[in-house]
Amino acid sequence: MSENIDDATQLSDTTRLSDSTQLSDSTHLSDATHLASAPHTGTTPSTESAPQSVALPNLPQRPSQAPSEKPSPTTDAASIPAGDDSTVLKPRKGSTPAIPQQATAQSQPQSQPQRQSSKAAQAAASALPASINSGLLPQPTAQVRDFQQSFNALVENVSKVVIGKTIPIKQCVTALMVGGHILLEDNPGTGKTQLARGLANSISTGFKRVQFTPDLLPSDVVGVTFYDQKRGEFEFREGPFFASIVLADEINRASPKTQSALLEVMEEQKVTVDGVTHDVPQPFIVIATQNPIEQLGTYKLPEAQMDRFLIKTSIGYPGHDVSVDILKQVDITDRAQTISPVLSGDDVMRLRQVATEIYVDNAIREYIVRLVEATRHNEKITVGSSMRGALALTRCARIWAAADGRAYVVPDDVKDLAVAVLAHRITLTPEATFDGATPESLIAQVLEDVPSPTIGS
Image (cartoon, rainbow, N blue to C red; front, side, top):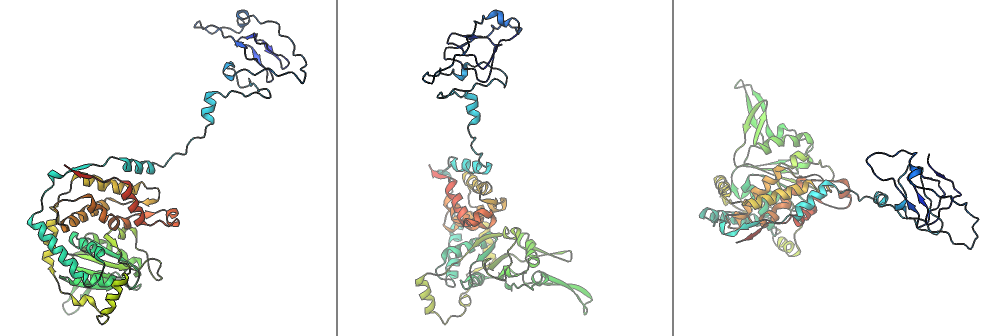
């Protein structure tokens, strides 16, 4: 039988308690109270032998305590024997109860788990940058120097049409050399159409323009098959997209049905009408212009079609001095008609082949992959860039390097083109959009977070 100590029992400093002693809720223990445990012999002792191993003295009754008497200090919680849940020791007034270490650990608030995306982004940012051995980089060949001259000649020719906008022009020429499509987004009257027509008129190849409207049908763009009664057979009539350079003016004013008809021709450079596939001429690029989505009467391009564009850029308003120079030539109504071609379609195809020989180090490839992965793990981005974006950035970087007269890609080539190539391929969260973030600003932040390779010996 176990010993029971009621609420009126007070234990002295030399009182020893066995494991079977039960304490009530109001029992007070002094500092010197010893708790004796049964020796471990490998077997569990019975409850009847517990009183025989420890002699319990006669416990005196608790005397009435005067107001001036000081209460005896409570014992430390670590000396309390392990018992059932009903054994609870209440500290006396004025004492500070000790908190068990295990309970303290449980009571501490757990830190909020970070998103896996944030950890991945931090890991990418904290990774040590790779090094590129400058001694292994190839020297430019005669083909690379010819590429540089042709590239600069094309940029200077288009600059006669759009004055003071060298960076957007170089980006558009880069897309032409890669063979990708261009999306020019800006407010009306900033020179989007003039830039597209200036680039088209700088190359002696086929050029067609389509003015997109809400009532435009897919057959009006890609073509239609009709029955020729005189010849007694069906004939395919090519649409305006059967040209080397196609200007899709105000593409976001067309209906989504017409916009979706451009997916095949932009990706595969083929058109399928009535089950028959027709190839478009080479070289083939689409230069599309659109007004910002805030403008009335527009339809947002679907994400699948946005991903088809190699580069998305804007022109912006000209500076003060450039605006004054433009007004001096107020009598020129169409600047695009004032320039002559400087390259042919065959020249463009030849320069594209030269660009494929530009050296891309493994450290550059690793850097591009880290940039793309960082867009997928950013907490402000719901849809990151796909592998199409990584491939596009690599191809554009090779053109950018060749235009600078180099036979190899450096990290600055990737940084100069990352915003134009990747920004339109990501989708922001509603919270990030509400806070004023833009795809361009997030890509710029990714460039700051991800370390770039270094070039050394």
